Each structure stands twice: as structure tokens, then as C-alpha cells.
Image (cartoon, rainbow, N blue to C red; front, side, top):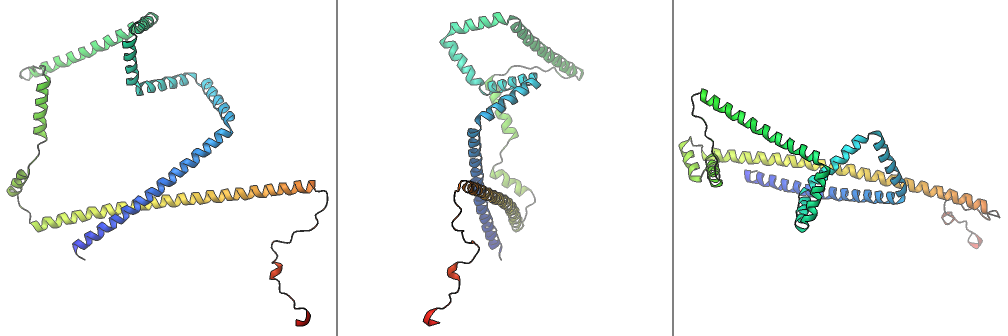
Length: 299
């Protein structure tokens, strides 16, 4: 088998395995969807049949949790409120801006009322923000003075930070990107190859071919492992479905036998006359299958 034939065979096997994987994934998705549908229908039917009981259990559970640890419940409620606010922060802000433009007097009245009721808290938040800002500025100043002192000890000129405009930052970033992420043209690559020790073309082609075949073989092995895992999962699901159907059939037979027994008991209790005939044994052979004895003149 030539190298081309081996490559074609490897490609064909890979395509076959990929098609089998796609079919197995489709079967698995269909089974999972059916399982979810059955579970949702069961949950819905159970809730409809036991709605009052479930609501009462939920209320009792919530009351017991609040009584056991009220602080934890409050913390969880605050956390849920905060998560909701973070998820809908932009919508709430847009709504507030719209209300402010539509009803500025009402918004001003609401702010004044809030400040009057929480003046101490508002002033405390303002002091905390100012203190944090001042502490950050002092830390930045200490770091700058320390840097200037170390530079002066080394005999270097002091740093001269200055503000740059958006245009200067754009050109600086462009020059940095061009320097650190240089793209080599084909002419540059050919020039570098000619300057270095040239590899024989046949060896380079063989190396490329071997690397390609090794990668394809490795991918095919991974695909086969994935296909085996999918088949195992499908087999386990089929076994579970078969066991579930067998259990459902057994329960149905047991329920039918129970109902038949109840019906016989009720029938015997309400019967006023004895049974006129007994049903033949179902295990006995049919009368038409019994051999007939010749009679009359043909005897």
C-alpha cells in the first residue's frame, strides 16, 4: 500500500468514525430530551395532584429555616437582592434617568426626603469616600517620592511624567504593536531559509508527511475513544429504560391482579345463587385437539 492509499484509508476511517459520532450524539440528545420531557410531565402531574400538600410543606420548611437562623436568611435575601440589582443595573439606571427627565420635581422631592431621613448615613458615606481617595493619593505620592529618591541615588535623571493626548497614545501603541508583533513576509522567510543550513526537500517532505499521518492517527484514536464512550452511555441508558419498562409492567400486572382479586371478592359477596358452571382449566388442552373415537358403521 502506497502512502497515498494509506492516507486515503485513514481519511475514510476518520470520516466514518465522525459520522458514527454524530449519529450517537443525535441519539443521546434525543434520549436526554425525552427523559427531560418525561420528568417535567411527572413533576407537573405530581404538583397538580398534591399542590396543597407541597405548598404547606414549603411554608413549614421556610418557617423552620427562619426560626433556626434568621440572620442567615436575611443575609441570603440581601445577597439575592444584590445579584438581581447587578443583573439589572443598567435597566434600573436607564429607568431612573427617564423618570428624572419626565418628573424632575418628584425625583428632587424623593432625594430630599431620603437625605432628611438618612442624613447621618449619607454624610458617613461621603466621609468614607473622601478618606479612601485621600489615602490613595497619599500612597501614590509616597511611591513617587520613593522612586525619585532611588533614581537620584543611582545618579540617573529624575523621571519626568507628562500627560499624553489620545493621538499620541494611539501612535505609541501602534508603533509598539508593529515592533513586538512583526509579521514576516514570504520574502523574509525565504531569505532566512537561504541564509541557514538548507534541509533536503525529500527529507522535509517525509517529515511533513509523517507528522500529518501521526496527527491524523492520534485524532482517529481520540474519535474512536469518544465513540466508545457514547456507545457505553447509550447502552446504559437502554438498560435503564428496559429496567424501567419491566418495573412498570410488573406494577401494572400486580395492580391488575389486585383489582381482579377485589372484583372476585365483591362478586362472591354479592352473589345470591351459586355458580352454575365452572370455567375449564386454562392449562388443559383444547377439546378439539383430543383424538376422536370412531363410531357407527365406520367402526
